[in-house]
Amino acid sequence: MDRHPTVEATAEDIASMEIRGAATIGAAAAAALREQAESSDAETPEAFRAELRAAARRLHETRPTAVSLPNSLRYVLRRMDGTDVPALRSSVVDAATAFEVRLDRAQSQLGAIGANRLQDGDVVMTHCHSTDALACVEAAVEQGKHVEAIVKETRPRLQGHITARQLREMGVPVTLIVDNAARRYLDDADHVLVGADAIAADGSVINKIGTSGLAVNARERGVPIVVAAQTIKLHPATMTGHTVEIEMRDEREVVDDEERATIGGIEVENPAFDVTPPRYVDAIVTESGQFPPESIVTLMRELFGDGVADPWLDPEER
Ligand SMILES: O=C(COP(=O)(O)O)[C@H](O)[C@H](O)COP(=O)(O)O
Image (cartoon, rainbow, N blue to C red):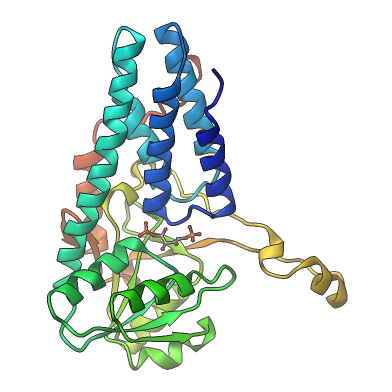
């Protein structure tokens, strides 16, 4: 069998952002590998392993920035083990399921830790849509705290609308603002609370484009910047000096062809993420506790000390 249709559909949905947000992408990738394993008709262990690697490669090539994607693929493929196909299959199915359970558990642990930073009556300003960040608000609300939110709409894809909707479902009063209004409304905020697509070894935070500008403005206004990021957002390759690739997306997300033609010959750039230097971040909240950004490397060494091979590559390519 070639790639399972679910792998193809998941890859397309990640690329088009039907499936989006780092944690959600990681979970979907693990689920797609499980589907591939469950329906594989490979007759030899070698064929099975090759199939799983091919599926992982397809998923890996979709979006380059959220490290939860390679971390998810690595988690599952490293646990692929066995001398026959049934054993290999069940190792992949078990690993994918364990990964999803870990994700859920990590998010609720992180939420409880992040909620401790929020006081009754606090106002948070959000950017983009982060399930890890929202877990902190949800836990605070469940503790009986009244929390309000100022939600940046987040051009060009308007993920702020998803955040606003989910906060309303929690009963949180929401003020939706355009991105350009953020500085004006920072005076009304007690925290900036964002997620992350990747955290680098020096504590830099890679998140939705606009996060770094928001952080600089928040620092100038004296508003603390909290990043909610479970440990699958830690980027192991940055420990050895690699940088995180910033995804450039389709220019038509910024301006459609018709409008562009009326403007005349312009260049359009659409970076999806930016890098916030550690000096603008007050705390990174993970399921293992909260850390000043500069000390996140200690946690990274603990978790990824054994190296970061890419198990989706064929053995001769590694
Ligand atoms: O920047 C984004 C999403 O970008 P996009 O919409 O381009 O995928 C989110 O802040 C992080 O992925 C964290 O999300 P989570 O906390 O849910 O992992």
